[in-house]
Structure formats: structure tokens, C-alpha cells
Amino acid sequence: MTKLLGMFLFLSAIAMGGSIYDYTMKAIDGKQQPLAAFKGQVILMVNVASQCGYTPQYEGLEKLYETHKSQGFVIAGFPANNFGGQEPGTDAEIQTFCKSKYSVTFPMFSKVSVEGADQAPLYRFLTSAAANPKTAGEIQWNFTKFLIGRNGIVVKRFEPEVEPLSTELVSAIEAELKKK
Image (tube, rainbow, N blue to C red; front, top):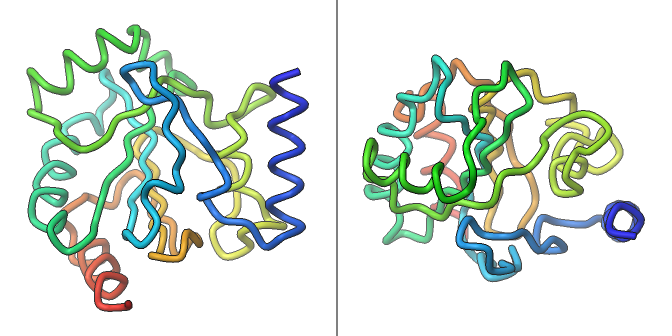
């Protein structure tokens, strides 16, 4: 039933032009979090993992968040165990790791699947050629980043090797923050 509902929401989002605001995700603390709560903010959505070569990007992500959050910027971390089993922990273990190792304060969500048959509806939307032709395509690895504009529409996609504090990513975020 949940998969059917997810598919319905996905198809509805495509039919209506859709945005990330059409989705509700479970936060890492277990509470349901409507993404519509982030309306009007610039969002960087990142599929994260605790045992990946890119895991040190948490440090840059936190710096990026601290630098720009007062301007209406938020990072949404989505742990995923799709690639190399690099996120094997429970939500509680992931949360403890992120806080103790990298002092993460940006919103973290419950572990999801970002590819395959059990792909979360949000990630089906983000990677859909019908919904987001400019940023479509399967997630290839951990720390893929999607920049979402203040209107909830996907603006740009950054692959894992793009560091959080890179000129390319920071410039794109700052350009979106200037838009009202």
C-alpha cells in the first residue's frame, strides 16, 4: 500500500509540475516531516553515508549550513545504504555518528533507498527525466547533491566529487539565495 501511495504521489507531482513540497519524509528522530515546512528556503538535498570515502564531506556541509542558514538555506541529509553497504547503522547510530564526529546540526532524515526497486518516492522524483529533465538520472554514489530553489523546484545536481565548499557549489547556492 505504501509503495502504491508513493507511486500515486510521484505521478501526481509530475502531472502538476510538482515540487519537493509534495513529499513528507521521516526525520531521523522518527517524526514525519513535510518538506513543505522548508517552503521559501534554498535546500541542498544530499544522500549521505557514514563509511564512505566522501564521508568527510559532512564537515564541509556543516560549514556551508552554518554560513548560509541565516539567509534561508538548509541542508537535508538522507542516509542511504545503496552503495557498498556504507551506511549499515540504525537511525540512532547514524545520528550519534553525525553529531559526535562532525557536529552536524542540519536536518537529517531516516535512512532511505535512493535507487533500485525500493527507491524512496522523493528520490524517484529527483531523478526522474519527466519531472526533472535537467538533473535526471540514477544516483551513482553517496553524497550526490540536489540544489532546490525557494519554490521547491530542482535547480541543479552535483555529483559526489563536488566538495561542499567548492566554488561551483557555493556560487550556485549564493545565486539561489539572492532570488526572492
